[in-house]
Image (cartoon, rainbow, N blue to C red; front, side, top):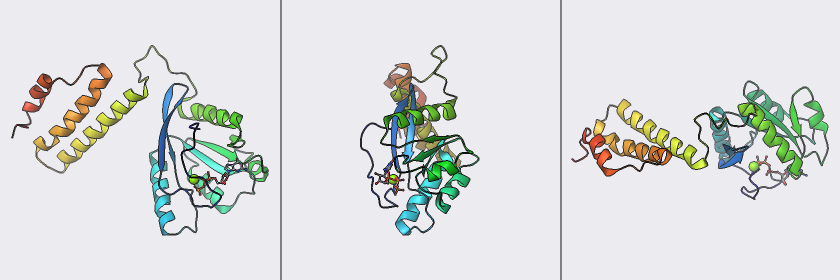
Amino acid sequence: MLGHDRAIVSPIPGTTRDTIEETIDVDGVPVRFIDTAGIRAHAGRLESAGIDRTRRALSEASTAIVVIDGSQPLGDEARDVLDLTEARPRVIFANKSDLGDAGARELDAHPIVRGSVFDRATLIALRDALARTAWGGELPDLERPHLAALFELEAVAQALEALGRARETLQRGEPADLIAGELQRAYAALGHLTGEAAGEELLTKIFARFCIGK
Ligand SMILES: Nc1nc2c(ncn2[C@@H]2O[C@H](COP(=O)(O)OP(=O)(O)OP(=O)(O)O)[C@@H](O)[C@H]2O)c(=O)[nH]1
Ligand SMILES: [Mg+2]
């Protein structure tokens, strides 16, 4: 999907443990992909830690891409992942069509993408299915206010993160001046959106209220 080798891939089950994130452009929409450990029943300690991360990433993701080995009859693990993602927006991808289709045939009742990651047309079909599932496949309406560039999305994400940390600090009942740094980071990040640099003068005015001079 990224167009280059990013993660370690091997025939040994349980290869991916830490989550791996990359953002790519799908029809002009920046999409953050998170590759995760596969959910397996008999995992060792390290792998189980990876699987906890998978569950966390899954609960936060807007769409799940469920990759199933479509060449083999479905095992318990494939069924578990299908159950786990049943109520969520998801794309089911029956992979390894070059090796067989026993599993893919069992999935006939679902809308699925069938194919192989070694086939370019499959990757295009996956992107299309993702766009349809995640945002109805519509191209962005350029007349509406929108975040067109990846750097804009990242700026908003940084501002949100900083504001989130500031809110946590306040919720813990800590003094308000402790959040000055976070507010400054949020303001500077949003400055990238409007093209307005975070001028010292304005910052001084805003942050004077939080006594950062101390
Ligand atoms: N023939 C064939 N092999 C594939 C295909 N997709 C993946 N493989 C192979 O299957 C093996 C496992 O691939 P991975 O990408 O490591 O699988 P994974 O689901 O990330 O596995 P874990 O990280 O262990 O959970 C590797 O040897 C891949 O080369 C495919 O479409 N066809
Ligand atoms: Mg992997």
